[in-house]
Amino acid sequence: MHSTPARSHSRAPRTMRLSLPLLLLLLGAWAVPGGLADRAPLTATAPQLDDEEKYSAHMPAHLRCDACRAVTYQMWQHLAKAEAKLHPPDSGGRRELSESVYTDVLDQSCSQTWQDYGVREVNQVKRLSGPGLTKGPEPSISVMITGGLWPARLSTTCLHYLGEFGEDHIYEAHQRGREALEVLLCGGPRGPCSEAAPVPRAEL
Image 1 (cartoon, helix red, strand yellow):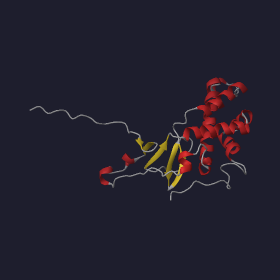
Image 2 (tube, helix red, strand yellow):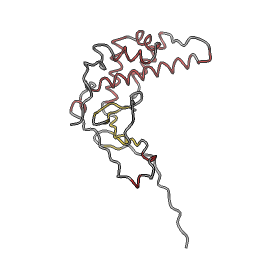
Image 3 (tube, rainbow, N blue to C red):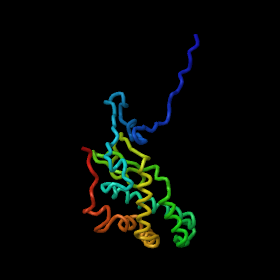
Image 4 (tube, one colour):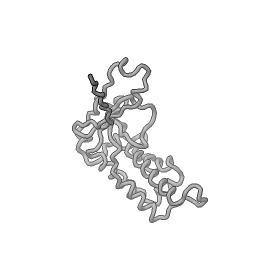
């Protein structure tokens, strides 16, 4: 008798889809001693979005601090990469972009797809999630809602800051570091991350 070789069914994790595309994040689940067979099944549910979070063209107020920090990170990343490309660290020259270049780079940072950002529940609180927003320990498993209106909201938020502060002022803050840029865009008494700003809402 000839045995039939077992076929491998290993596949990359798929994105879960409900009313909006869902990204299942499995962080560290396979590193637990004893394996998953000795543990209770891991479960995660998608954040329950209210009507404002589902349908409003604007970024919900309780998520504007996270959105501002995401915009800050993307502006800083785009500008830093442009500086490194034009002026490598070992070139010995001053890493400063011309006005026309940093204006174009900032426009590009706002017009990107923003596809890596979405909303998930962290400690029973809905938060924006994506590059530049991770702080503290990550949950072992969570569901992030991406797509929908979130990319457009982030792009609009980014363009708003360009119009409010101007490319010159933003680039000057960038040259002082990412923290200085975040203070400019998100801090201040009326900034989205000020103590008076709305805080992220907990799930009911």
